Length: 356
Picture 1 (cartoon, rainbow, N blue to C red):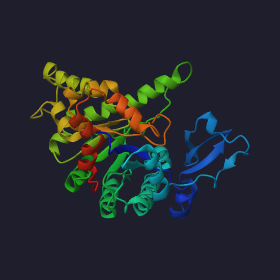
Picture 2 (picture 1 turned 120 degrees about the horizontal axis):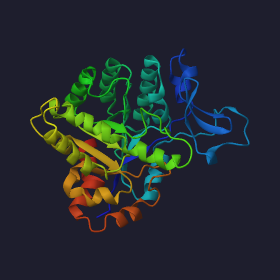
Picture 3 (picture 1 turned 45 degrees about the vertical axis):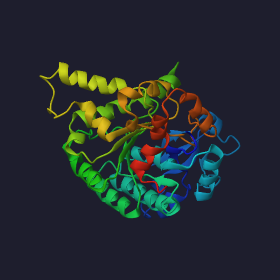
Picture 4 (picture 1 turned 135 degrees about the vertical axis):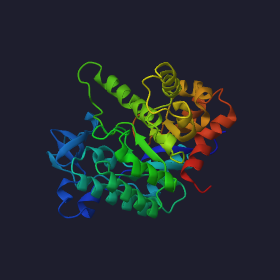
């Protein structure tokens, strides 16, 4: 039952000179990089610390300043070795520095440049190996630029694209996004919204903040999924697939039921009037990824197995690497074999077109 696994959520480490070398000369000093500031290592973009590493990652034996060496980017050999250790056949790849930095950028031209450089690198590095499905980065500040980069990502053979989980500057029910939905649906390219992007991952401070921030971050996709369903985005574009990534699945059954309840009980206020209840559109077009989620698995009959994909989240600390098979076996006890097969294999093959 767990002989072959595809992880639908992993992160690939870019070379830290990627943007310094490949961005236009006028932008290179503002691109993503790794630095130590105040004794803490973190990702910097536009001269702002976008993400601080945990204290254990601080390099106390180095003076503050730029870190140009010591951060080795991934390649097919290193990723393949990690897959073998974890007993996983293939993986969907999201960025690492690009993930933490891109959607923090305020300059639309710089954001577009960061995405283009990453997409070129990840397609050249992983695009030829059938075990990898690298996800393109899309600029979010300029929808026209996002459409252009999505078209380019399609030409590079990238099987999906990433937007921020939240776009508070232009919410996803804004009609300005319509050309992007049309483009993605027309190409059959799934769009992904990864937890922890578009808003700070650390809104709370003080006692309990680490726990509160984690829960707030991973549950934030409830809002995004609801917007895409209730606003009519998915109804208007039935070929558009959308994924909520690294957010778990335990919230999904409740969200589907709550959307439908609001539609029925508050019908006088609901706009637009959709042909079906909102849950219909997510079950038809949406999916979520999880690492460990007994609650989501216990409610799979209410959500449908087609909506769930497992991911190891390698190399992040909350992931299941290098014990994915053991952890999966434990949480899949009592789950029907055909459901397990869908969650750990079939859905990923269908969505990303893995050549197996």
